[in-house]
Amino acid sequence: MSARVHSLVLALVLATALAACQQPQTESSPTPEPAPATTEASVPQTTDTIAEKVAAYAEVTLSADLSALSDGDRQAIVHLLQAGEIMDELFWRQVWGDKDALLKGITDPAMRRFVEINYGPWDRLDGDKPFVPGIGERPPGAQFYPADMSKEEFAAADLPGKDSLYTLIRRDDAGKLIVVPYHEAWKAELEQAAGLLRQAAEVASDAGFAAYLKLRADALLSGDYQPSDMAWMDMKSSPIDVVIGPIESYQDALFGTKTAFEAFVLVKDIEWSERLARFAQHLPALQRGLPVAEAYKAEMPGTDADLNAYFAIYYGGDANSGAKTIAINLPNDEAVQMAKGSRRLQLENTMRAKFDSIVAPIADVLIAPEQREHVKFDAFFENVMFHEVAHGLGIKNTLDGQGTVREALTDLAGSYEEGKADILGLYMIGKLGEMGELDAARLKDNHVTFLAGIFRSVRFGASSAHGQANMVAFNYLQREGAFARDPGSGRYSVDFDRMAAAVNSLSAKILTLQGDGDYDGATSFQKEFGTVGSALQADLDRLQEQKIPVDIVLKQGREVLGL
Image (tube, rainbow, N blue to C red; front, side):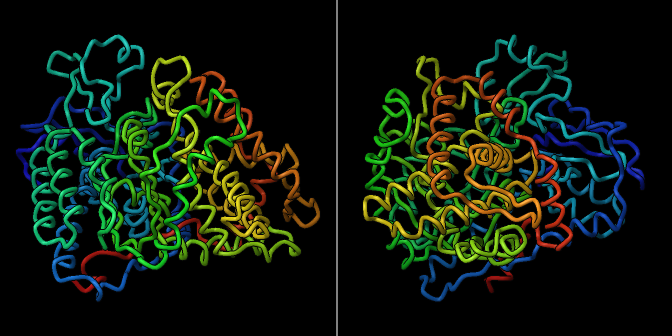
């Protein structure tokens, strides 16, 4: 990366033990932010412990059959992979700082590898606990804000663009808060990425995809992503795809606003996609039938949405940190969703890898033998698929007209949106069964597989929006009698009648909190249901003792694909 570019990084001065760290001023850097300091809570973990944590990730090779693609599309993939690698580097800067300086001070191979997996010295699947000696707690605002900035100072600052998804907050030489747009902070890197997208557009076979790539390149350099989001929604027939740029805001635990760079490079599974395409037309009917008061379902989702299956061949940046997503629902822009709907991309090869290496072994340990037959990949695929579809249901704007649900719930918005999608996904499967669009007899498979999937997601830890959402769902559904734990065997079984009723009541609760923009109520509900009880913790410990992987790590890139 060019030394002339705004780096906005933590350049660490690390002793062998990483006893202290700081960020020196660089010629083109904005005012540096203090690095996380050592705290009494920073308990170094042993080499053996770190090696066990690394071993808890199952390695999966991301590949796909590219033989049916045109020469131009294969060339485009090379450019897209290179652009994705730039997103990966920028993500490091957003959440930590100078990756090379951090890794240089670590001699233990297992610890170095675990830092790479976590994009920093905090364990993403264990509540962001620091695991590198000398490193303190993860700053909630990552590197999006000054480490010494309070919420009150931010609220009082009269700064146009401070609430933008695509700006950093820094201090000037006088110590006052300033706004630095992403496209200015990382101008050279984003110019390089934009150039690669334009090169891909020149050789791609699909005209709609090429148009999207050009607009996305423009967006990287302007910070205006809506036109490219619209173009992405209009793109229907390309055999390849890319999701690239600053997209999700989960890394901003201070306000839940600032977006992190990521990239997915994808190859379409034509056969599966054709099987999935028909479900989008039912969204309006499903919205009307939501089990909540009329005011909370008055918004009507767009029907110009599609549902497709893909082979993922690259994850970069935010997409590759910690737990790997197995499906994508975008764009996040509420205006685009209302106008166009959203696209749901099922990552078939990643999904299969997680089911085989994680979900099925979990079911063997924790699901009652008489219900184990209901844990199936097809049900797992459907649960994930309808989770993504369900993001398009519900309510995007609060009933008081004061703004979006995301703005009202701030740092809780991500976990509630994931929780909504989880539970409405089950609701949709039941309704589509009643409509004759799905095999209603398979609903039991969906319910039991959903329960097994909760155990998988809860292991993501409290720092994950998905993990938080699943913890709330687990405790709420258990309280409502949707499933029970046998104290003798420590295995779980679903009560199918109570499960259906609990799905409806939890759906109504989440949709109401979102529609009301009720931050205090959302906080209280999450506090009540968002903790791991002693029995569940004992069960999760059993999974660890069985050495069932927590998640996957990816072997990927041009060499793997033979490009």
